[in-house]
Structures are given as C-alpha cells and as structure tokens.
Image (cartoon, rainbow, N blue to C red; front, top):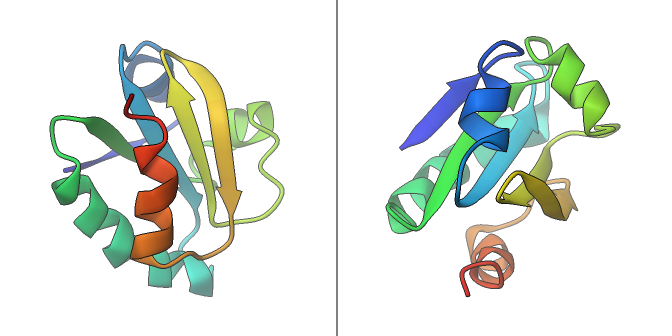
Length: 106
C-alpha cells in the first residue's frame, strides 16, 4: 500500500516512522513520474510489512521537497529511522529498484 503525504502529514508519516521508508517525490506533469507510478505501487505490495512506501507530490509538499533538495523528479529518497540513507533520481525498472531497496532491509 502506498501512502500519499503532503506538507502537514510528511513528518508523522515519514520522519517519525521506525522503519525503512521510501518516498517517491513526483508531479502530475512529469512523464517519467507517471511511468514510475505503477512500478512503485507493485513494489509496495512486494515489500508489504517490510518497507513503507510514500508518494509526495512536489506541488503539495513544497516544504519537504525543498528540505530534501529535490531538484529533479522522479526522486526516490530512502530513509531509515527518519534519516536519509539513499537516493535515486530518474525512472528505474522494477528489478533495478528491488536491487537497491534490498540493501536497506538488513
């Protein structure tokens, strides 16, 4: 399951989580973001109970997009216990994302 956040819910949903959280910073006008959307949804099901998946529309999370210095989208930020531990910019296929995400499960 993917949780959608905005500036007011970001802190509780992402920074205060006691697990690995993967945030997809995206926008409705971004072509590669639209391509990543279904892949991100599939991955959220594959990792259910292990990783929390969050989508942050950059037009609705201006504060946090700025705080995380998101310059290009899609931008996937990987956090563990509220701290950034990884970042991927641009579209990636499902297999490539799984390889990256698996690194943070141990």
